[in-house]
Structure formats: C-alpha cells, structure tokens
Length: 251
Image (cartoon, rainbow, N blue to C red; front, side, top):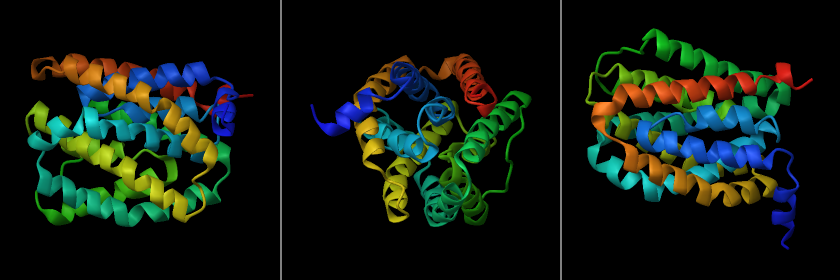
C-alpha cells in the first residue's frame, strides 16, 4: 500500500470527512456555493487547517468537469474574471496569516467566518456596490485575503453576487466558476509558501472522486425554480458544520 494512502487511512474521523465532502459536493452542485463552508470547519477538526485547505482545494478541482462546463456558459465571465484577478493577487497575503497564527486561531476563524456568513445570508444582508471594475476588484481582494487565511474565498463573493439582482442561474454560475478556479490557484500559492504537504495531496486525491460524484448529483438536481429550497438546505448544513467545527468542542 502506498505511504500516502496509509497516512490517509490513518486519519481519525476519515469517514466523517468523506461523508461531509460528498454532501458538500451535492450542495455545491445545486446551489453553486457552500461546499467550503461545510467541509472546512469539519475537516479542520481532524487535520491541521493548512492540510484541510489544501486537501479540499484539490478535491474541489472535480468541479471543472462536473459543474464549470455548464456554469461557464451562464456566467457573467468578464465580471467574474475581474474578481478572480484581484483575489489571485491578494490571496498570498492571507496565506501569510495562515502561516503566522496558531492552528486553533485559524479553526476559530474558519468556523466564525462560516457562522457570520450564514447569519448575513439568513438576515438578507448583501454586499451592494455600484457596477464597474473597481468594486469588483475590491470584492476580489477581500475574498483573497479571507480565502488565503481560512480557505473561505466565497463569503464576500456570495453576498456580492446575491445582491446583483441577476437570475438565480447566473448567480449560481458566477459563484461556482469563481470558487472552482480559486481552488486551482490556491494550490500553487500554498506550495510557494511551504504549506502544500504530501498528506494534504493524498487526502485531496482520495476525496476527489467523492466530491465529483456529489457535484454531479447536485448539478442534476438543480432547477432555477427551487432556488429558495436549495438555499435553505445549504444554510442548514453550513450552520451544522460551522457549529461542529468550533474549537470549543475539541477539549
């Protein structure tokens, strides 16, 4: 048995991690967001935050096959690419925080940001900015800073897209394209700062198929008319994951 697989199988809570990744993939497939908000609080209970972030980023690359081809056709590509550019430039500064702070602090940050995002979504709070490249670059920069430190690039972009007034399928597509591409760009940036471990690559590779199955199922379930139901399911699962990931329960 390869050493990387032996290490993966030895992870405490591997079954819980695997089930969470599958469920999060389904949510991502029909809602276009929420997978990192569900996976990272749970996974970081069992492995170091930087391992969880890198492993999830690798497994999330399955969305390039299962979600992005359809989402790319429906997305507002110029606007999404502007947000992506700013996020890419600022993410390394967030990774510096990931390196500098203790693991418990990062775990609090992951679950705390997930809970704050959930509260904002439920309350109907949105990041409403005038159209144009400068606001999009600002949103991308904020996403990159948060994403580098916690792996959660999505919250500010989700709130921004929901405030855009676009159709449900376009909001879903914009968010899905952004989050999937940031998963790809996160890996070399972690490597450049010495945080891409063999353990993370093994775990991410092991979870890749599960995430692919989940996102494929979720994509098949997506119907624009059920937007409210999808969000309700996503909100419930995000809340459960974020609460379970609080270091408060880890002794």
